[in-house]
Image 1: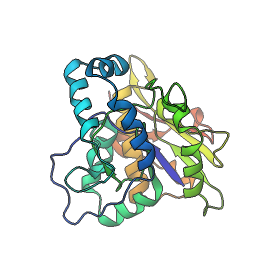
Image 2: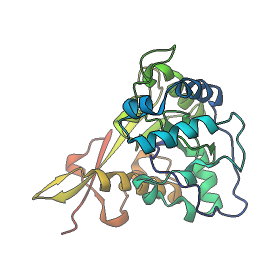
Image 3: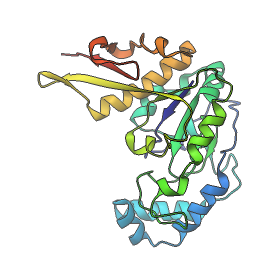
Length: 258
């Protein structure tokens, strides 16, 4: 079983890392290098327009692309699960996971990335910004979905090859999950949906749903979840399975806080 997460726009390269934390290298460094070379050809103004970001943020990322190197070291990179710092990762709280938990996550967690394709939690990550939905033209096509093509799904198949009944639990956004070619993927896919009570009804609230995806990943890691049935017990921060609204392929969890 593999759990898929989106990356985060916010990055943290300042907080202290756990002592002796191991690291691995990303699987698709040559592909990342190809994308960096394309990005390096663009001016800060072009990056700002391409990514719909401010001029200062565009300048920061142009500097990141210039500094990027195919050799990953402790000086220019840190483990992905420690570097990403958005809502999902606030829920995951990887800094507080035990070494055994991180070892399990390394085998069962995959972070989708516009630049790196797929990352394991302990893969080294150099700072970047490149969302999967960016229409960055390359020799492979007009956007990153065409650039990555079958690559991500084939990689997930390899990671699931030892499973008798392979399952992918999608905790990523649709923007990122679209990079997984479902025609190529040889696994059952389970979606987890998180709804909160707001305005007299249950609905998906982006901030809470993102955090809940991280909470679900942490729940799976700490409990060594290996079957879809085990997901149904998820109960962190007040969420509970809503059986009537769920199907075997779409598990709905609800929380009422008021």
